Image (cartoon, rainbow, N blue to C red; front, side, top):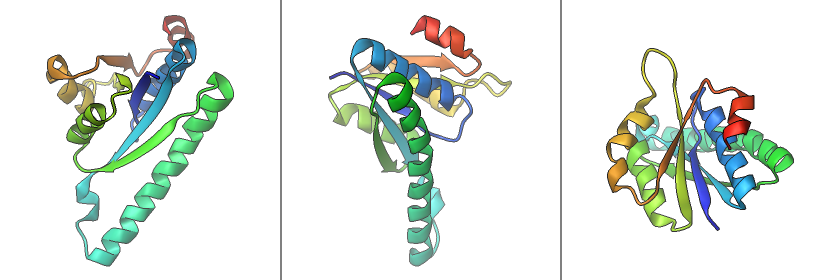
Length: 151
């Protein structure tokens, strides 16, 4: 089964990327894999404190994932899979794409403010030519109606 890999983070544009991935998966018989990356700088504390912070980060990710997963199951009949990795976001995203041969498309949300599309979109599009899968960039300001029309 072809999977749409979408990155779960705290960005506003993440919502449209999630919607797009779920709608495309529902229409094409594919699946959705949601990847969240915990950056290493969150755990640069004493060992015990770092472990507590790591567990709290995982709990926040799972809670955030469950909101999207419920919508995907209820509205799109898609049951997403959650992957949590630790490290720098771009290398971890690339590693996930290379490690899972069922991933067919990487879906990213693009910011629409004056700061540009966001660091993930900027960094990953630079290496798009060497990726083993295409990247779909979903504008963060796209309306739900327009999103439905293009999927």
